[in-house]
Amino acid sequence: MPLPADRSLPALAAALRRAGVKVGTDALLVAAEALVAVGPERRADVRDALRATLVRSPADFDLFDRLFGAFFPEGLPLPEGSRLDLPPERAQRAPGSRRLAEALPPSRAVARPPRRGREAPPDASGTASDREVLHAKDFEQMSAAELAEARALIAAQVPRVWLRRTRRHAPDPAGRDLDLARMLRGARGRFDALRPARRARRLQPRDWVVLVDVSGSMAVYARTFLYFAHALARRSPRVEVFAFATRLTRLTRAMALPDPDAAVAAACTQVLDWDGGTRIGECLGEYNRRWAKRAASRGAAVLLLTDGLETGDPLRLEAEARRLARTARPLLWVNPLLRSAAWQPLAAGAAALARQARQPVSAHDLDSLAALGRLLAG
Image (cartoon, rainbow, N blue to C red; front, side):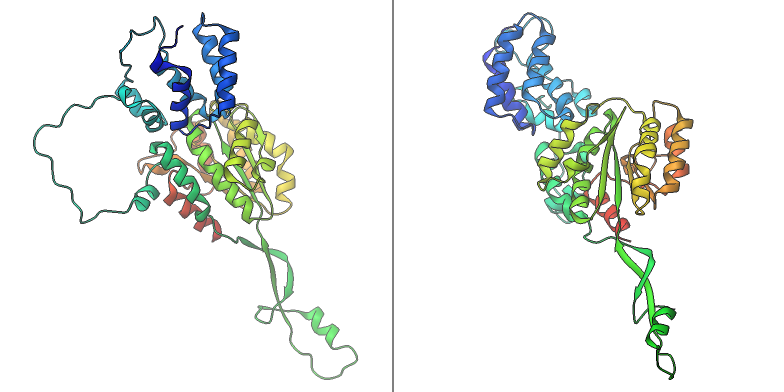
């Protein structure tokens, strides 16, 4: 499979960089050596070799496959000077299509037909700033540059303090209860009237458990929500983070890294089933068996990010969700599908989660993450 000038390995690497994938010179040299090793005879071998050497995060595999298909289509190589255009209907439906369109060189962009008739003049009366538009834009519709800017703003959507009342009490002059023990201790050896002392339940930071669905339907939202989980981990004393699709992966150590980009990149490399199937019930069952007791002993609240599209047994999902809801304080279902006002939990998995979790909240844009932060703080 020859590599024409406009479809060379450096051109593919440049397109990946424009799409937001970090490709260094060392990776490019290793990819060139891999091409020599596998040979150009089989297209699948070339694709696998380039994906293994140029892409580090499993979350970018789908983007690489579509870019590779655009640069090196199946069958005979295109003649010199030809153009390869993506089908517009596929580009509109596929997640990350904005990133793919921006990654392709201008010569490959799909030509839009000229508009006929007189265009309506722009209305500047209700114009919003770019920042306001970005806050209300769905993560799945953002370009690579917009996603990078949005992820830099996510930390601002996370409140700084979450407190919960414990069973223990502490002296408080404005407390509602009388501290009889302290009053009696202060009256030792004295015969005058007892002086009132009051107490209140002690406040301490709340612990959190974040369960992130990284299956194919949730890949874009999952990666963005990991930035929210990282900001949560930086501001709370104890946060446990897990990713799940067909298996459960603990990401707490990766989320402890101070840099959010490095933390999310480390988390993505640990998840082996990113962009895979969905077995929510089995993964929740593994969490309930191995980790729930550790978190529940400290009164942790659970954030469950998933769309509820279960491919396993919905009865097991409901049983595990019920068990999780008993130990969580509380169980909050974060569902990006709530971006649509017409969404209803009609799928069996979604209906099971709706019966066991609290009223679901969305996390599809910056505004919804800010609303989630206010809900957590309250």
